[in-house]
Amino acid sequence: MPQTIAFTKGHGTGNDFVIVPDPDGALDLSDDQVAVLCDRRFGIGGDGILRVVRAGAIDEGAQAAESGAEWFMDYRNADGSKAEMCGNGVRVFVRYLVDVGWADVDGEPLKVGTRAGIKTVTRSDRGYEVDLGPFVVDESGVLVRTRGGGAPRPGVGIDVGNPHVVVALPDDAELEGLDLAAQPLLQPEPPHGANVEFVVPSDPLVHEGVGSIRMRVFERGVGETLSCGTGVAAAALAVRHWAGPAAPDHWVVDVPGGTLGVRMREIDGERHVLLSGPATLVYTGEVTLA
Image 1: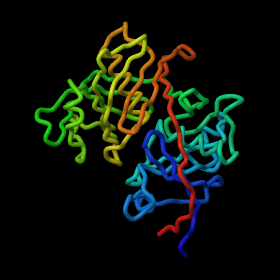
Image 2: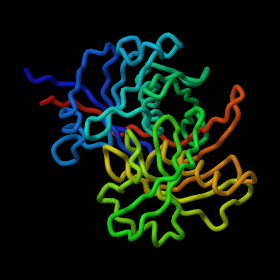
Image 3: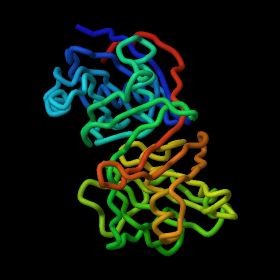
Image 4: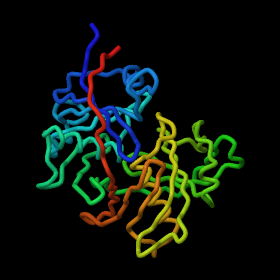
């Protein structure tokens, strides 16, 4: 029998999601069902699915539940594959929880379980801010080739709970001329793939203590998106790494879908990266699963 489910469409700076409430973990969406729901011609359309499930109702959320997180963000890419984290998605996830009355962020930070561990979310002047946790810079080097882009370019690996490779470009013209209709080729290919960010520094790079860059991104399992929250954080971290120890801890990153804020701070003796930006709910409806 076909099954009809409720959904909400939301986005964070144009990175859009189909939000599916499933508090008791009753749904078992196949990869094909996710792909159809995310299809922009034959489905609702989105860069991925956010299944809203109680941490205690999903095996992957057991550790999060033990650590005090009531909710788990089951994030799936548009092709149905599972992803560790989504910086824009977790803000939209929390906006949904707040709007339907399932959670509150005004009293204290809200813990959300993800495949990359628990993330805490608070309100900010940009909308919501998520602590993505500690990060890792991998200087072993990856070569990135884009379709029609000539010789491969060097990239730096950044892990913010999910893997990224960041490539620096010299100017806006080259950034805008990139052909990201095809997936960039990475050499060597990371074991689980990676999102790939292409960045151009602003001129000046730093103004009044805040760094500024522009970025485009190809997300694994999705394609080019208007924004990628963890990619924005990775891009800022990469440029800060290249700029050296005098680089600022606060950054503004422009993506095709809008502007996001990134900052680094020390928490419990570790350097964390935090991402802030808007989260918008667009409409609600019902859909019948194939």
